[in-house]
Image (tube, rainbow, N blue to C red; front, side):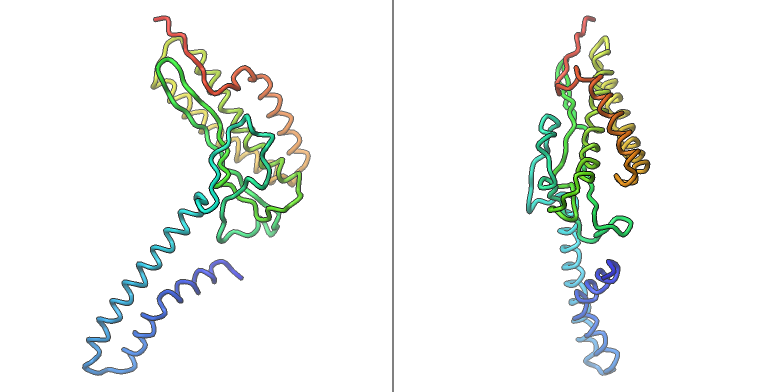
Length: 233
């Protein structure tokens, strides 16, 4: 069934008591209509509050599935990640370009600045990541999604490399480096999905895998989350 139709029917169901009372009010033009009007307004308020509450719950669960929560996973556990870790909820989207073989992954670059040291690490968010069919056996799709995690790790390491080259501990410069890294990482993620067509263009998928793996190896010395800045001034 069309998603828009489902939403429309749902809203009509919530407001059906108020709609019915409006119908009675229009059909019977009597002095009692003032009482009926007050009843309609009251029902409308309750219906709106119910709709608002349900929408809020759906919005929260769509962002993070707290009903089946799993804390963010760090890159050192990359090899353990499977589609079973994709615990996010998707209430409406059921296909990608008409294909039910689809998933999406949510990753972030997390940072914490301390005295003369900083922790920067990439995180995979299981309860915000989604796969339409958890029992899918598509190794290609899983590989594609997991390379999104590798891309986030790549830009995390690039940020740590740049931070490590600072001569003095400058919190504003560190924040600026991380901000730029996040922007570039998002742009690269979009480019990756576009050029590989979400894993369907195999030649491009393999090209990105080779490129990302090569760059990660070059930045292997920055795989530890915490780096120290030797402030000599």
